[in-house]
Length: 211
Image 1 (cartoon, rainbow, N blue to C red):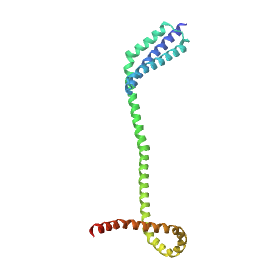
Image 2: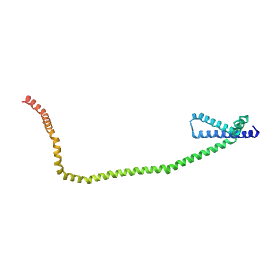
Image 3: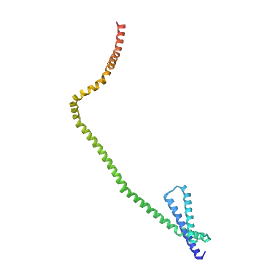
């Protein structure tokens, strides 16, 4: 490994240390702003170290074909220390500003969607409900008016066609009623007798004791 490659590897590892510091602050700020449950913190740590390991080995493969030397860890350590000593405060400040901007944009977009999409749909829905109710009320009102107007005409029509229909209906109904006449007459006589039976008993008792 030439001296040029060694210095280049040291520089790339220094940049990797800076990137690891930035990634750590991003995870910390986002975790705090989203107010995630505490039990998710170990999962976030595992994801952070997986991403950090992949990043470092990728940079190492690009810089010196994956050869691990002492100055590799030295460069990462210097980068991390430099970041937390001088840059961490500013990066966190920028992240907070960026989050506030994103939240403001989200609220603005949400408000615009409500004003120009949801609210018009709600207005159209309410208008349709009002129109539908009005149409139903008008339909019922007109139906009642038509019935009131047609009722005299219907009575007149029945009065006019009744003499014509009665001769046609009687021959059809009479064969159906005739077989029932005898049972109905017997039932009437039986009911009449049953109605007179208590009176007969009372007359008998009265004659027996008050004669």
